[in-house]
Image 1 (cartoon, helix red, strand yellow):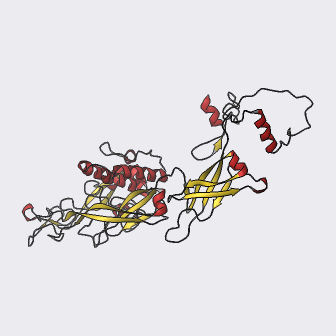
Image 2: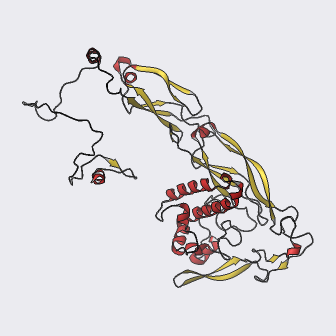
Image 3: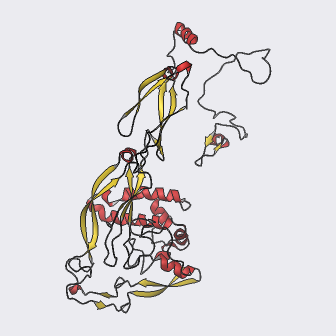
Length: 443
């Protein structure tokens, strides 16, 4: 469980401890977008950067079943190394390979665990990072409108990244200066410690030395590089270009290879990975390469046909329909019209999906037909009623003329009774229909 002085990861993402993976991912996207350093004033950027990394770390842990279980059981103590979590990997960060090797007999890294700013990218930045390998990937959500996904989008932005100091070539020291062996780890760069993992259970683990940051040696202040102050890296600004191909969809990843922070211990830097987040649209709904929209028509158009522009497409074009009603055919509510080839582009191809239009018939307002002569003309034109239908049995011998009132729904149906069939039909969040809940809601 979490200790009183550490922030609860569930609270950080504003989700309950029972949240599903889908809810965790949705909360991460929402929190990451609002907390991204590029969305705040420059004076608040440092604080926003720390919060963004904490949010990404929370998602990294809670989105994986194994690490989530470790966190639920032991809190952040399950991921401490060298004195605590630093949220950005490297010395002092979590080494899940070591944890698993101690607890489960050398099973290796957990699948889906990423590093840096994102989680679970599975693209070379997962698990514990070993020296000499590729650096960690930085994964960020990127909101895109449906119009932009339809037409494609190219955007340029400024990126500030860490690069290896050219003055000292990543050593951290002045030219010809010699580093001193670290007394804490005796030059090994690693120390061993015992850590509790549960009631009556401990594990022995090897961690990077906190004094020398795992290098086994360090430079005295007077021997540190004047450019990087011994940090071995410096900040560099660069203009990057992000291209989203037409037809991209929710969850697609746009990779800017080698544009993540550099580390002198890595053979090459990691990638910046943008994960596409599709914004909801007020007119169109998307499923794969197909689009759906409502087609609003009047009663006269449903009965007689029409020839007009019915909607504005995602690229700004007007879509015109010429609907003829031969032999008295009518358009009915909820009827579906399919227009082939007017859906979304299929990424990196010339194919397109289809557009499905659901007919919604708008009836005239009350009072539009007042003139008795006009009423008769409408009756003469419209089909005649088929006569009374009484269901089972013969035509009744006795008839009562009754009064009525119009109501909006069936909420009053069976109200006050304990019959589970009472009330209007309803749907819960899982889409399961029922009736008793509507009755209970009004008691």
